[in-house]
Amino acid sequence: MSAALSVPPSFFWLRLAVLIGAGVAVALQIGKVPAALPFVKEDLSLSLVQTGWVVSIFALVAAGFAAFIGALADRIGHLRAALCGMLVTATAALLGSQAQDGKMLLTLRVIEGFGYLLTSTSIPTLILRFAPENRRAQSLALWGLFVPIGSFAMMIISGPLLEFWDWRVLWLVTALMIGAACLPVWSVGRHVPPGKGPAAPAPQRILRASLRPAPLLGAMTFAVYASNYFIVTGFLPLTLVGDNGASPLLAASLGAIVIASNALGILAGGWLLGRDARPSKLITVGGCVMVLCGAVVFATGLPVPVRVTAAFVMICFGGLVPSSLFAAIPRLAGDPSAVSTMSGLLAQGSGMGQLIGPPLAAALVTATGVWWSATPVIMILALFTAGLGLVLRRYT
Image (cartoon, rainbow, N blue to C red; front, top):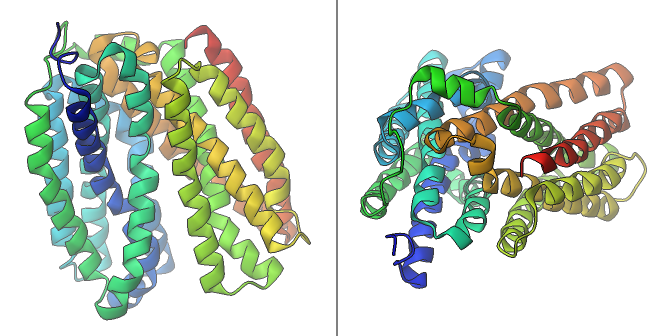
């Protein structure tokens, strides 16, 4: 019996929770920025351009380097890569808490981004190696929880921390939380069975694996999904304030609830995948629901409860997409030694989606002067998501 299969169920779920917790810890680096941004801008006298880069630098790093960082993890060893990524992220956050100007903070945010990617592309392979065959898809799907949980948790604790301290405390807290997660990850990772096949695939082999249709389709699906996710979650509070006259506090609270709904969708996806649901089918269902709800979210004149409910359902069903893509990583990768490379490609797709979708929607809104003009973008992206789900039936 393999080491993975000999693990008692209680230990299996504990190990999975530890590894997902490591992802949550590094994802705190995403969630700490929105609440702290006004204080950072004032304290460091950041320009508007610098302020924008503080927000979007993770997406830029992911869009440009995620697949290469995933390939690096495949070569140096996944436990080593995960721990190195956590230590790099924690160190950069610790130093960032002492930043005295915008250039230093941005440089350290880039380093945080590299560490975050090194960890987040390594852990899926660790999960794949210790999970028994009948739980692999479900376990990888649940891994998708790390970003919404990390982002939402940081949104919750940022308010009380910023009420009593300055923004630098958020950087310190995230550094300490990542550091605290290192020992449990090492304890779990050292018991993970070694992978089969070459531990350090040649760069040419990784490139060939990455350029196959299945990995590229997976990355494209994540890109269009992420575009929609960030358009809705990023702009919904602004539309509630501008179109419905909601208070900024109420709009931010409702936006946080919508973000949390994504975790519900990922959990539902994990449950369905654990019962042999087909990933491509779940992606198609998620895309279709996003089309229907996307027609309502930015519809001018509708009351707040209707718009927020539409956004909640849209982002919740949207959670079926990342859970399904993460569950399909082994089949999309094709080569067992390129699983982290595939994780990197998904992250790269997510980064590209963040960089393309929201600016495109914002440009249309700016040109027309009404938020409803973002609706065609949302619906077209959702249709692409559903269509790509149909295409992926061949590979998943």
